[in-house]
Picture (cartoon, rainbow, N blue to C red):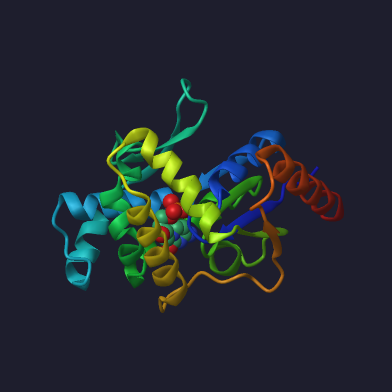
Length: 228
Ligand code: DC
């Protein structure tokens, strides 16, 4: 069967990455968490005091950045590597979350990310999640899913995830960060978060992980049949 491209876009903390990872595993496809790439770039800028509002500094810094996903046999996931360093845990920090939307809105950063993501999809057989995957990265994708969830559900999910690592985190902090990122991601000039006109919407507020996986697997298998 010919492989297809599947995109999952949506607001922060809708569970896109979890769903995309499970879907890729079921189909034996490659899973790419595009947000991890913007997070790794943000980490690099923070560490190197790169002013992301200065185009010259951004262009010079991007030349020093190599991003790579490497399989982790302990977790079974692909970890994000920044210049050969495993930064998978570091990029999930609140400090990175606080700045990533601003960094991801910079034109040169977007061009850098999008070009690499498009390269990863040339052979298809890929599930990629993000904000602009169905609109800008792979407008020709065979299956586009736009994931949504009730904002209160999203805050609760994200809080639980972060609290497990840092019990000092407050629910208010998480809520403010999600609201800020949703606003910045949707209102930026270059490839803002939008539902592609041909995307199918999946509201997973009341769905378990198994239920949502069953739904998207059905959609994926239908599209795979139609594309062959
Ligand atoms: O999916 P995530 O929450 O890890 O993404 C982190 C940030 O990266 C998000 O706030 C917006 C940005 N992002 C983006 O601009 N485009 C993408 N394709 C993926 C993420």
